[in-house]
Image (cartoon, rainbow, N blue to C red; front, top):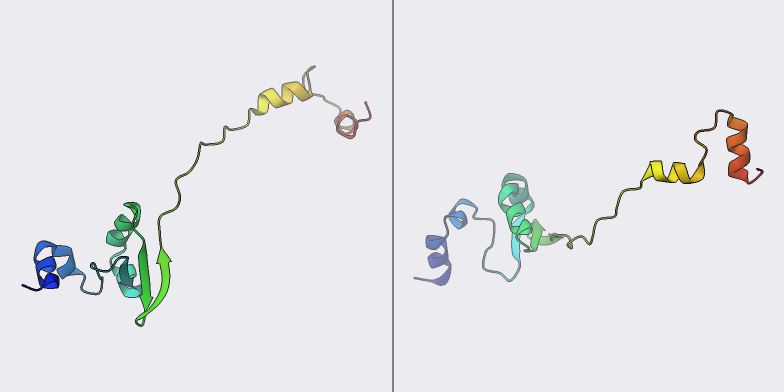
Amino acid sequence: MPRVAAFIEENPLARMHPGIRYLSPIKTATVVDLRNNFATISKWIHNGEAVAITKRGFPFATLSPTRKRGKAIEPLDRMARLQKLFPNGPVADSQAVLDYDRGNT
């Protein structure tokens, strides 16, 4: 049995999506396949594989997974910042706030 036929026998997805090529180093799919079979293609990308998208037989785009994110940035502690800026509590007079921000205390 030829290699492609054996592959199709082992993988039912290959029979369901004939436009998707499974044997190339990078998986390829047509624009129509991307629209009709997005769930399958997104699983490939989620698993770390790049997918070349072709349009009318020519490479159109490459979809690849994003890099893993680094450590998350801690959110600002706004109350601590306000307490540092205004140790005596909130100021009722807006002119006093403007003077404070401009350094005219």
